[in-house]
Length: 565
Image (cartoon, rainbow, N blue to C red; front, top):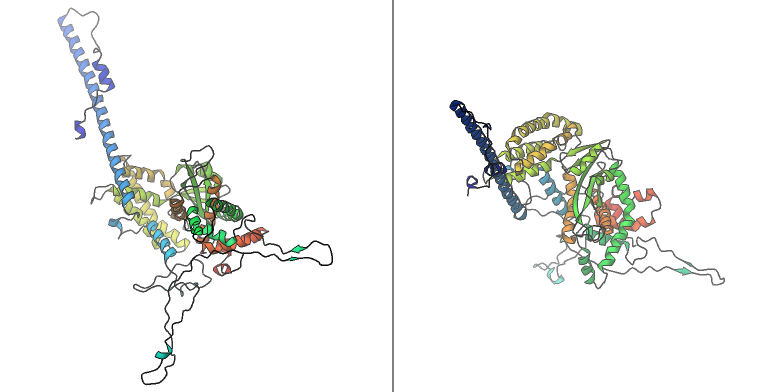
């Protein structure tokens, strides 16, 4: 059925007209002159005709508006259905096949490179022992990458039987060399009990009180968990994404019964012990000139005065000096503007965010200037491309291509100095932005506002002044991908543990996620760093001793000790 065949009820105006008498222009007393009477009748006829015409025009306009609204609604529903099907069954990458040869999105490449660095083995010759965060060297095609040099080597010698070491000529053979091949081996988790034996001494000739060797400071004095156990507990939950219920079963396979409730209390206790490091990291973050910020939902079951199904939020900030990257998580039940204002109190610099209006109040704070993320803009145009008829190139493709030019410039000058990158942006990026703005102004009036393309255009137009800020300097980012990459481990973990039981648990998760992600950002293995920190932090008495445990103050050799705690 076409929209032209849609029948609608009478408009209120026409209905009212149909239910009333026509207005009259005739006087109460009619003239006796026939000519004058004819003139009055003609005027009455014209008045009625004009009224009917006006009513008909109003009804036609009303009907056209209804048809247009219905048409737009159907188009929006079809677009949403296409996008929903794409999200459920399509590829997660936003890279378009038609554009793949012309534009490799920086966002996608960053994701791929991050995954490669996290999973690829590190060749022995590529990273010295003191290295921090250098990318892995890819092996040649068809060649297996050597196993990491820092792994322990256990030699398993295979010798030729003595009976076979005689040459057919009768001469005993001599050893001339050896062939070495390596296998990756793993030792299952070993659960053991540490017995702390404290020697006691007393004087045999006097009544003075005996003395006992002191127990070193413990992270959780009232628990029977060692520092290394606590480090493993935090690593499996917050690095590997293993829920406490599953770790309970892992321990049970080793005949160790530790209820998940106890594990949860230990996690919250560790967060309290580690809080001073979180505070110092915040000081470092707020002293930087640029902060990336984003938020994601988290469900907390026992939040006061809130439904268990209500959404709360984990706020993520990342930044810091070039050689001291910081990743901070903060839990808050609210998504209001007061949260970023609270978290960024004392910060002066640039703030990179998406287009969420809750950040707008930050711009009223003295010394903070907002940047908007081009990856979010492109994502909306990619959605508009996906809802287009198959094989048809539309205006959304034009936007994606122009945004691709901006990312291409960033890739080309990624390794350049800040000064060179600024000049490149002024020479190459600014003209592309001018072209894109002109295209926006020309295209937006021609597109249905609530369509996928219309919303993408509106989103870009509303953020335009913030989208161009990055060209003012050479050290400002084009997008918020750094923060989104920091959020990803939390989102992946959330798929396994689903929710937090209490606000205390959510706050503890924020602290520990902050620590392990900051350790990873500084090139440290999270478990090794946590083990060192949990061992040493209880004995730290001064701020300097706590600062010495921050990730950028420790290197891989500092974490290799086997001291038992």
